[in-house]
Amino acid sequence: MTKAINNLTDKELIRETIENADQRAFGELYDRYSHRVYNKCISFTNSKSEAEDLTHDIFLKVFLKLSTFKQNSSFYTWLYSITYHTCIDYTRGKSSNRQGIVLSVEEIEEQRVKAFHSNSEDDLLQMKVEYLKKVLETLEPDDKMILLMKYQDDMSISEIQEVFDIGESAAKMRLLRARERAVAIYNILLKNN
Image 1 (spheres, rainbow, N blue to C red):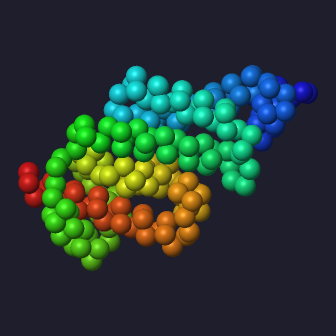
Image 2 (tube, rainbow, N blue to C red; image 1 turned 45 degrees about the vertical axis):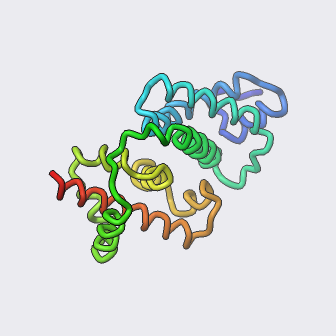
């Protein structure tokens, strides 16, 4: 290897890890992306220790599955997909302990219909910060993740498609519905306060 390990591209690091069992190469991938994975995990767990555990679990999965990475997308998109599925599985396992606000399906649907007739993206971006955490805690994990992908991580629709393994129109529809549900929950919170 002629280049310093930290100057290698993700593709080169992956090749070194797979072909030469180079632990330093995988360590460099970990160093590049672990903080991003940890931040995703903490947004789901609200616990530093659980987020750290999930981050380590995710990188163990990545190490074990690295040879299956086809490199059709960026390494980060593939890593994000593993992160997403691990966080969703974790959240579903703890769903009985969710700390969100309990809202009726009818109430959310009524507000979602209202949000449909407004510009839900503009409404979403105008949410007061103090309510945003409550909205995110109340949303279903899939809705929360797609909104974080789009607005926190600035992922494109094509990257979202890859993570969810769905078509473009399905990705756009999921994003629209998640925005509508978030705005609906926000409106309910405003109305109740």
